[in-house]
Image 1: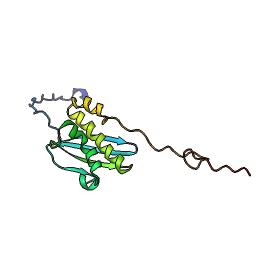
Image 2: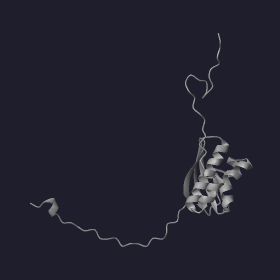
Image 3: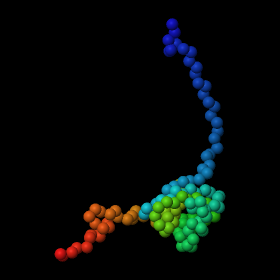
Image 4: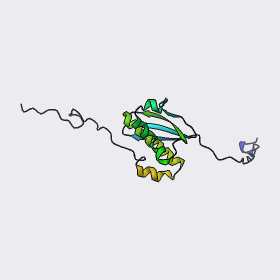
Length: 152
């Protein structure tokens, strides 16, 4: 009676190595944060589209100041027309959201070209702003506000 080990074994043929072209990334994705705002940013080279939560940049951030905050990493590196981006932003206020998008774009640009890191670091675009609202403590009205004291 033949055992399982005596069964015919078929050797796998080695697969011919195919020459692969260098993989071109469609996009670079990074997460940017500021306070409680979080932005998932994708930058695409050659694209002109700039969307934030599915809306054009000018509609989502109507203030010119916030628009300039968002595109400032592109302006500082002088690559403004070369990249497009899409961002999904949640939490925080509108200013924190704009700076979270800027943080994500800056991180993605450092992945795209590591030489950009030093310049973006000195401008402060790679620094995450960790300030958040302090939690409320029990026995207090807010984080530190004690109830009003009465003598009698």
